[in-house]
Amino acid sequence: DTEVTQTPKHLVMGMTNKKSLKCEQHMGHRAMYWYKQKAKKPPELMFVYSYEKLSINESVPSRFSPECPNSSLLNLHLHALQPEDSALYLCASSQDGRGGYGYTFGSGTRLTVV
Amino acid sequence: KNQVEQSPQSLIILEGKNCTLQCNYTVSPFSNLRWYKQDTGRGPVSLTIMTFSENTKSNGRYTATLDADTKQSSLHITASQLSDSASYICVVSERDKLSFGAGTTVTVRA
Image (tube, rainbow over all chains, first blue to last red; front, side):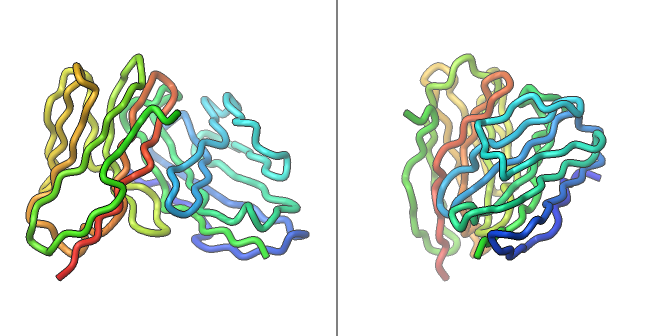
C-alpha cells in the first residue's frame, strides 16, 4: 500500500458546523502533514506530526484542530470556519519529519464553507 | 521572497509536441528536489525526486534534470498527451522543510 487516503473527497459545511477531515496511510511513515491549498497557489503547510507528536504548527487559527490518534491516522477537526477557509486540504506523509524520500500526498478534501 | 521560482507560469502546447519547464531555487542547504504533477482539485503526484548527486531522472515521458551548481532544474515532457494537462510543481527539500514553487500550468490541445 503506497497511498495516502483522505476522506471525504468533498465537504460543504456551514459556519456553525463541526466536521472532521480524515487521513490514513499504511506505509509505516512516521511523519504526517496537513496542507491548505487555494486555487492556483502552492500548498501551505499547516501542521506536522512526527512520531505522533505535534512538531510544527504554522500559526494556524484554533478553529482548525489536528489530532493524531496513532501512527497511521491523522484527523483535522473543523469548527466555526469562515468562507475564506474554503480550499483544498491535503494530507501527506513521509518516512520521518525530515522531508526525505517517500513524501506522499493524498488526493485532498475539497472544502466549501457557506 | 519565494525560494523556488518556476517558469513559465503557464503554457499551451499541441498534442504530440515536447515542452520544458524550468525551476530555479535558492534553498540552502539542499536535500532533494522533486517534481509533482497536480490535476485540478486533486493532490500532487510525485514524478521524480533527485538528490544533490543526481543530474537526471526519468519517469516514462517525463525527464527531470538538476544542476546543483547553478541551482536549476528542468522537467521535459516528451510527446505530450492530453492527459498531461495539469499543474507541475517543483518542490525543494531543505532538511525538514519543503519549499514549493508556484507551479507551471500546462495545457495540451488536440
